[in-house]
Length: 258
Image (tube, rainbow, N blue to C red; front, top):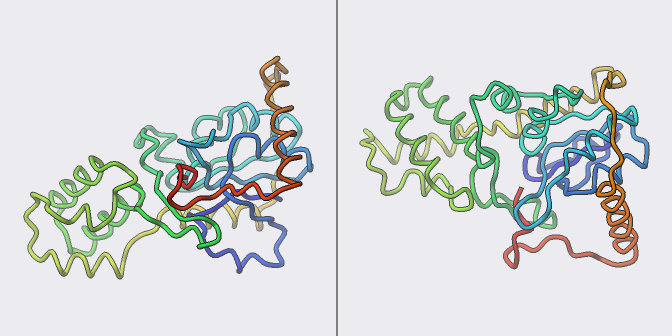
């Protein structure tokens, strides 16, 4: 089984010896190429967008039409699962449920900036879903009132996702807080990483639960665009097998978003 993951998972050493092969965040064509290897299942957690074409819905549909179970959670996986669950893709976790139910709508809810794989996908900003989960926990712990948490959530949402950090959320805010320094310390010790939690649920589902072949009731149309795209992806793979493609660049381009 193949899983595409990056900053939502970070440390994957604990998966050594499992039936899962962890690959970098998915980009357009990766699910198609993975399907050619005939895995039992494909899990999508993290994926690129912005400067890199994101995973195409049609390649996920093609994978399922080939009898491969496709699951999604946490980040790009949650978005695609909410868009394709009626076609048989399996969504896992709270973030997927919130997208499915329309509670979350914007792509920026799961977006963040991060470093390259060589640096362990070091996070350079915080995802909005993690902000929301942490503020909710702070209310339950009586660290924040509901109005205070609501105002901070609005402020965080208004910050561009590449610039959204706890420091930017808590600094220069108009929200009156009883003890700003205590709140910073509390968040540092109790931040809720909802993306990582949901990624864990997806891995657990793939490892411990029997995955049935998807029940597909749609016809996959092999359009001219599809044929052209698959040829392009195969050519890309052939080139990358012969040279180091240098996919990741920490600060030089936009390939570090997921």
